[in-house]
Length: 628
Image 1: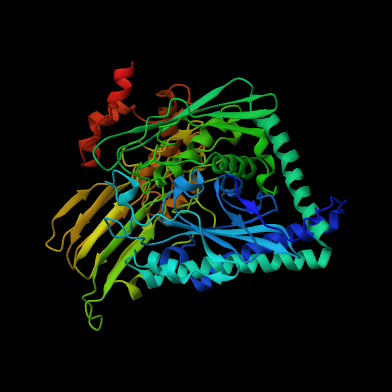
Image 2: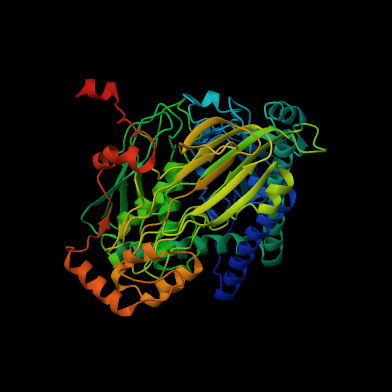
């Protein structure tokens, strides 16, 4: 049954004409309210994942549940269709179970709060915020087990429940939930921060409605949705062809020795609408790399990508959803069947953006981005703190790292930057103050960005020295299948992780590993992938390459990928450079639109030699083979 909205004032809102100035004021006030939500969250939360890195996403929706400002798109329509209960003034919804909301949150670590905003007896808006909790119980510290076979192993699952009901706080529910986590102090503070952020936005909406009138405010939200619809309709006509185009990319492995896993999408325009069909995507994994992709979430991803590439001034919201049809096969990696594990979905989440770039750029190569959004590297470190004065206190760290952003039409990809625009790195000073570790190195991994007219962003080489014995877990990707280059650009280098023991021995560790024991004095070299390059590397300004040698972004050996001969001081030998470029041009054929590097089987054959790790085994799905 759909939700029942209890309104004491049944009078409908009247649609009225809004002048451009008023619309602009309300639009920017909503933008500012969203920023204020983020600021409130950061100042109130305790976990480093939210407080330091900003792993949380706000939303302000209209009275029907469509997002007006936000980042991930609105889940509210699907929630209202499936919530068998009432929503009334004083209620607030709390949830974390992806399967209960059609993937609106995509793993159970994301706790979501939804506040219906009532004014004078009428529902006028919704505010919502979700954030990643550093621990929700389950079989491993951090609650994201690589080897989970079902979601029941990943920690507490919260269906949509009322954390506030008619203004009364459900304290017993909170005691029950917090009892499941290893860090109840962090989780309680982070949840309170989510609630506070929603209440701040609620107050701002009420203030706007009081200032301009309820009908003006509601009409303005509808105008913003309609404006977005018109803009996206124009962009779709310009950038999407009627002839289908397809693109596929791969998750390197599942952490259990199997891979790669293919994600495929085909796109075309039909009757003014975009069709995005994921037929051909591999079936769901037995491990936790599945990504329960909500269709509306992917529509928002598509819209964000379109707007950022073609017209960044557009305010993206839910107004364009009827222009997009998303088709995801049931039982696939992107729509797994309950109770499939979901905690490692971050790799597929990042790869979706690479696939969008590959799809959208085929008609307009001048707008094509290389690969590099790719993943979201995670490090977990936990144990009992052996530092003086810490008395063996329990600690646990969850940190998100960054790779190289791809080369783009407008310039080089940023080095060691986040896929999500609101994310920041955890300051090294914070890590060293609150955790038993010392950061020995934090720098760009030189030459890791793919060569091109516009260089792919370099990955990060971060070295942690552990000061207490404990365990670490690593979640990363792009160690087997490299980030591809475009328009003649070269692929970026792949990720790698090296554990250097205190006794001087070293071992290469996988990019998806769980509960690796470390001792005081051990060092972990955490090296992320580089972004693919854009355009012909031999067209890059030699003086710029020389400058990047001096900056430590490119080495003299790496400069030869650009046909540049230079010394360690970045001084370019122009004559030798011209001779080398002539030689390289003569020895190559036509530049490819996409440069994937070696094929999968060639990568498999060379894997042990090139990475120090065994090649993943091709996964099989016996039930599909039997059906054939």
